[in-house]
Amino acid sequence: MIGALLLDLVQRLGRATLNSVTKLGRFGVFLGRALFWLAIPPFKVRQTVDRISFIGVRSLSVILLTGAFTGMVLGLQGVIMLRRVGSEAFVGAGVAVSLVRELGPVLSALMVTGRAGSALAAEIGVMRITEQIDALTVMALNPFRYLVVPTLVAGVIAMPLLCWIFDVVGIYGGYFVAVHLFDLSGGTYFGQIRIFL
Image (cartoon, rainbow, N blue to C red):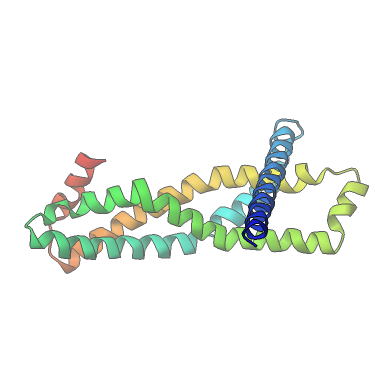
């Protein structure tokens, strides 16, 4: 009885491990093919610019709203907590360090993944179902070169810019709360940011 349970446990663990390694291997092959086609001309500049617009420009509203409210919440909590110990001058530094080092990259990536990533996955899924990807292959157009590489390049270009915008908007959101709602000096707010960043 115990031997059968132990054998079943080992089989499940082995199956889960093999599935994980298989998925990782497929992702590695996919990424390798994308990087291979990235280096070979001709480059799809128009498709890349369209994807930058789709990933970057259309995600801007989500990034602006999330960044502003994240900065406001950090500023509010920072003022409330630091005022108790007489250190509200460090609110700007706390907001900036939290956004630039931790929350900015993570939240901006989550927002872009949620908005653009799901739309791209749905688009490619529809293309697969309606056999458009097979049609590209029949027309001697490589699907990786035509679909994957422009999206990869667009993401690499757009994400740092969106993260930077998220950070700046979040810092100004914290500034709005700290200075306009809690009467903290604007010079103190930005002065501490310069010191800690």
